[in-house]
Amino acid sequence: MKETTVALVIPARWGSTRFPGKCLHLIAGKPLVQHVWERSLQAKGISSVLIATDDDRIAEAALNFGADVVMTSPDHPSGTDRIAEVASRLKGITHYINVQGDEPMIDPLLIASLAKTLKRDPKIRMITAATPFTDPREADDPNCVKVVLDANGDALYFSRSRIPYHRDAKDKASAVTPLLHLGIYGYRRDILKKLVRLAPSPLEQCEKLEQLRALEHGIPISVVLTSHRGVGVDTPADAVRVEKLLRA
Image (cartoon, rainbow, N blue to C red; front, side):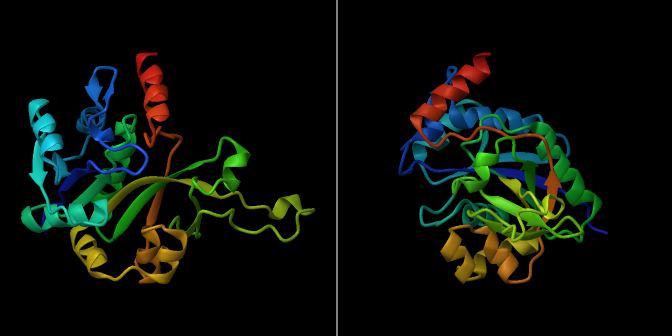
C-alpha cells in the first residue's frame, strides 16, 4: 500500500485588485507570506511546505527567509491551478493542502487536523473547514461564504447568500444555522488533477465560488469543524488589524 504523504502549498501571486503586492507587505517586520509559511511549518503531519509563485520578487523574498519555492506558470487563473502544476512535477506526494498566501494567522492545529483526516481515510477526495458564525449579521454578508452539511459531514452547498431559507420563521426548532466556510482545502492528488481539467461550472460562475465545481461534478467535499476563524488580508486596513493582533 502506498504511503500517504501530505504536502502543503502556499500559492502566492503579486496581482491583487485591492492590494497589489500584498504577499510581500511587511506585517510586524515580516512579509505577509512569511507569516503564513512559518505557521504552516508548525503543523504536524505535513511532509513539506512549499511556496508556489510566478513572480521573481516573491520567489526571491521567500528564498531569503528560507522557504522552498516552486516557480509556476503566470497563466493560472486560480491557486488550485497553481498547486496542480506543482503536483504534476512532484513525485511521491499523495495529498495536497492549499493554504492561501494571505492568511497570516492560519491555525497550525487546523492544518494538522486536515492532514490527519486525509491520512486516516484515503477515500476522502477533497476536504475543507468551517466554523460557527460568531455574529449573526455575517450570514447576510456575501463576502462570508456559507456552507450547509449533510448527515455525513460533507458539504451540501456553498453560497454567498444566507442558506437555507427558513420558510416557517415562527417555528424556531426548525431553524438551521449555516456554517462559515474557511478557505483552506485538501485534495487527493488525482482529484486535484481532475478538478483543474474540468471547465468552470454554472453554479461556480454564478456564485464565483470555485469549490462548487467539485460538487457539480459529483466530487464530495468533507468538512472539518473548527473554532478557528483566522484573519485574511485583502486590504491595507486588514494588514494594520493583523499587525495589532500579532503584536498583542
